[in-house]
Image (cartoon, rainbow, N blue to C red; front, top):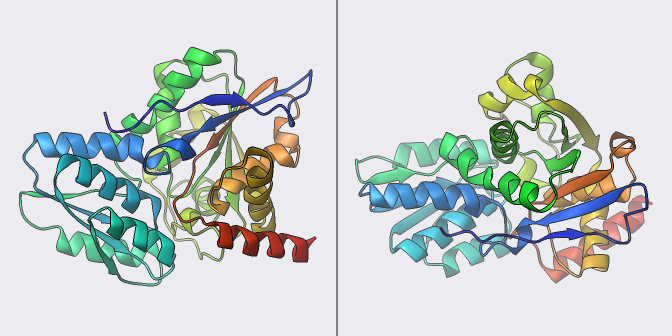
Length: 307
């Protein structure tokens, strides 16, 4: 098992006698994000099946997770990233021993190249979010949450391509927890999942957001098809609110996360109406490698300008 069990901590500043805010700190995974749960599982299974090379299209966090897993497993690894992936993330991937190829403006274009390159029976194409094994790995978050806080009644998560959401759904299904409000957070410029739910199928969504790790033009089909079985509530926030979530989290928890993670934290910081009736709210702090102190200061300036 390449991932670790992460802490579930009470945010004392946001909690009240009527409502408690719990943070599932997936940013503390060795790769910096929740991605290692599912990707680590897929890579371990691929290695046991005799695969000798991993190729992954990634906007950032999936690439770091694959590179980390490949290094641990002693397997060759190539990561295809779009131009939107920050230089700091490319450097982290390369430092783990993976080769990095920059292709296309957005993840979808990087994905197209990765699929072309992933030929041969010994090559494993590791998807960023659309694979049942990834979801099975991500679902272990729910196992851990239920062991520590079985009475939670709201779950807040960011949505990019839908892999994290799908994993949470698999876990909730396994524990028959359809009584939980699942609050899916996107920005107005990355609301591809909301658009898919409205259409009843994945659609190509025009992206325009600072949250690069939420920028999947077309989401996975399975969570769209299955979300009606859950108490799903969409939360569409602004880029400024997502940035503010990351900045405030850095200030009060002294940890760095991406704006793509800040969008879910913002639901708690804004005391969003969607959590008004909840008693125990769990926020998935999904993490992010594409973060630095200098980037944080830039976001702080942007938040001040938007205020």
